[in-house]
Length: 610
Ligand SMILES: Nc1ncnc2c1ncn2[C@@H]1O[C@H](COP(=O)(O)OP(=O)(O)OP(=O)(O)O)[C@@H](O)[C@H]1O
Image (tube, rainbow, N blue to C red; front, top):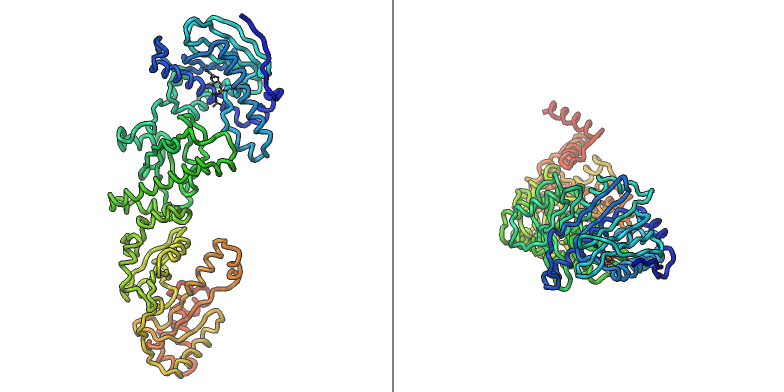
């Protein structure tokens, strides 16, 4: 039998279009052809199990070979094969119409959408023509009493089909590589493509005498069959040379969508180390992409590992993917799983969890900030650390400080420092009062504080240097002033003149005699506005950007220095006031340049005068 014919499709000459548009992604032809060979092999195995195929399965490897001289690449399988009729049906009709449909879709899209389609759409058999000027199929069906068939086509709509001799069951696809695709005749290049896309295919793939894949990657197994070592070993295979993961989650769901995979928590210390696009997306063990944006929630992008789902639509553009109901469900499922895993770790091994907190804290906070549902779960296992290094959950901490840190309005005031070294004096003052101070110095903590204030009832946060310690948490009983109103006014005037700076707002306060003579603070509100502005808050916050810092200078009416300033001659009083003010600047790390030099000199003079 010999037959020549024309494949009937609607679009004429789709071949040049495909070749041109898909230039950057030509390599996927091999993924497509090898997966077809694997599918055909698996189908035969199933037929064997069903008893519909009674012959010997024998060795079922898929073999890929290249002949540089002859300029051919051959993909051979011992799967179920095709009769001539089946080639006409499956290749001429299905494969070609699949390609036509692809081109139709492709033409409608704008440039950006085109980029996204590439590599995500299984072009199938037709993708062979991206690299080959002619493709041959030699196939013999597993069915008895059928003849082997030989099909040849150059990618146009013309084909020829004839009977042939083929000893073995299965299909050989032979690509005659086009002149512009020489790179694919290099065995290194082919091996690279095979390891990228076919590393975990379920049927052995042999290339140059070597099997390049693991047919049963661990995500396809049951967690009960696996040890911790299996998981860490697999992680090392995926990401050689990286530090061991902190822990992992084995995903396994078959309703209402199908998804398996393993997500690993890598060690990440700071934002700079966030590595996105580390999760690999598979569809039935065929690698698709490592751009999992939209499939995985944004805040989980720093996880590593694999997700395998035939339900993720790969043949559509991004905008569609976002709106896709299955993708949304997958998103929610993953978020829930991650939250459950963290919660379980927290409950079962608090110590171990606390040890990991420095690595996962940033991620948990990121999740809480970006996903309400995650916040609701995480609020019970998110931790905060005080300056003494003790870790608390939020409910624990609220309870811990409630008795001592409630102000006269019933608000719990949580004190924190962003830098325990620089704000040492303030931390100390708070601790002397019996208050506790949290360390909140992470990159997301400013936002985290804002969120907690919204969520936690009757709770506010204040940085330790936002006010003098007695005003940080205002209690009923105010310390009485040892100065008369008249003296207070006079004292304030001396300080105002000595400081003479419009951005320093001077006030006289009745503090404890043990407090410093002068305390400089930056009100919480003002600092937050400026922080937000610096972080590019924009919009309404913009106006604060132009404001210089306005500090509050709190002069302690009850400190012996206040008396000395009032009793001194005007010159000496002013000098003392300036000295006390400079000391306060020094404590805030604000004394610099000329002012610092003057302070050092004045101090030396004072020492000499003693
Ligand atoms: N090696 C093979 N052995 C047996 N049948 C094959 C082989 N390769 C292709 N076929 C048949 O040709 C059909 C068309 O293949 P093609 O790759 O274009 O599409 P597909 O595999 O059905 O879908 P996809 O677009 O996901 O690849 C297949 O469904 C299959 O029936």
